[in-house]
Image (cartoon, rainbow, N blue to C red; front, side, top):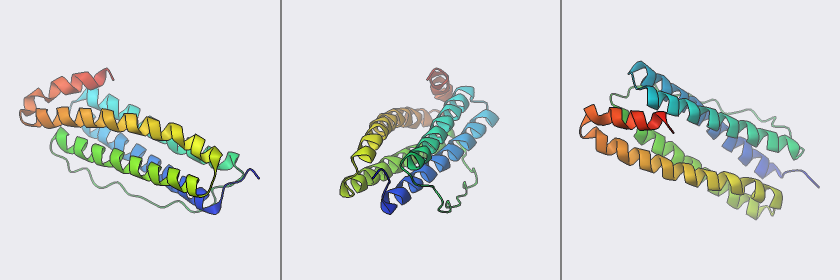
Length: 165
């Protein structure tokens, strides 16, 4: 049979929701950076938002390809109000979200192993590798932002770097 187990279906839908939540959060971060005249960071977070949205769509399309209709209600999520004062605070929450996403993908991958679903294991392998790469990039950017937080006027250097990523 080509279908997913109910547990995997639920797990994939949960992961897609995390991706959509990250997309929304990163879009609002881009607005904050735009508002505060950091165009490179705004561009970077808009790109990240689009990538997360595509991940969410791809996960749901995979569920449908495996003969399941994502009919469960999606959890409603709210973005917390943007109360950041300095760029570093946004990068701290970015690192936290990317770390949580990797943890969630690892749990979903292990569930696929438990359910003995080779197709889902294969499907998720790419996401795990990509997420690990994304987390490494996020940690690098976070560390730069942390260093620039000591002399906030220098943050424009990182903003310029992000414009080209």
